[in-house]
Image (cartoon, rainbow over all chains, first blue to last red; front, top):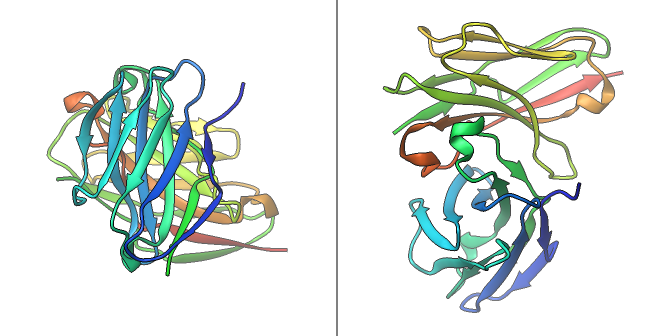
Length: 116
Length: 117
């Protein structure tokens, strides 16, 4: 069974540009979570998509947005990039109603975003 | 809001020895999940072990076991017979069962585990 995949592995952008990160969940998983792992800040919850809808977002500004496609893959967009957006962005997937079924989330390898 | 605290930024253990990583959390909820994830240098977060708060029995997975003390809000991870492949960052994580999982996982800052050959 294929795990969660993310692309690209690395992304280098300049301040003010837009970045698009992609995630494909494990087959059968409908929930996708995005996390930011920035140096010194740890792992922080960014966004949750389920059944094509944004269900919740963490304490991040609106320039962090995304969407979930009918095949449950997801895209994270970061607009007007700032230097502090440099981080590892991790995507995780879980079953629908995952909380009721054990709560596990399975992570992808991440996208390293560098903003210069 | 829930918080997770890992008080050991770094731990070192000799190969084949046993090591315990500490984690405490703060919550007002009675039902939740706790996890230990491992992040090796390859960056891939790997689920190590899971504990349901309503279960008194401590979870075990091969060489990995937890000591879950609900009243003390403590959730430590014991790694027995440490192996070189265990070297990684270990994260303790909390997940609420309320709101259908809306808040995702709340992570601690992590503990860097070094295995000495």
